[in-house]
Picture 1 (cartoon, rainbow, N blue to C red):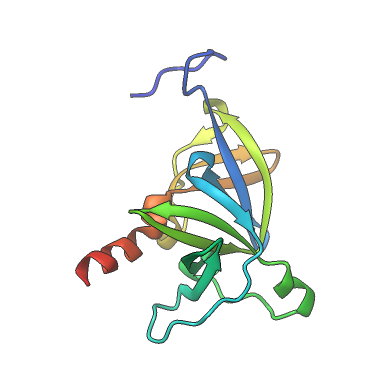
Picture 2: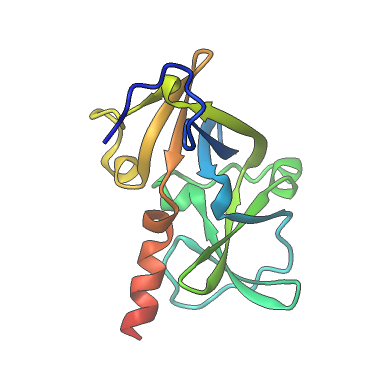
Length: 163
């Protein structure tokens, strides 16, 4: 149920999102799902893992599965420029008691957005993205695609339950 928001001060009138970049595309993650922002290092490849799984890394003593957002969205890997490869960032997320590192091209700012810029996921958005998005926000000539963390990491949880 959506209520018309006339600059109301009710709880839920605005949501906070951590913005991340994959190439030039801007994505948002609900801030309450983000636990860490860090530079991934020491990633150990996992044989026979799905292409989205970059490998495992150590985050403050915990073994964390590193997931490439680029690959999860069906995009090609970035060009291996020395400087750009070093600038990769990771977002620490939790799902089903497990910690994941979502590897992105860059991390932007935290945005507080209201219902006035929120729209449904466009029907013409690629189906791979549409299934991973909850909504979009129009910002000064850019589109911010809000990702559903549960859907984004859902394949991993399903695979873990089957094992």
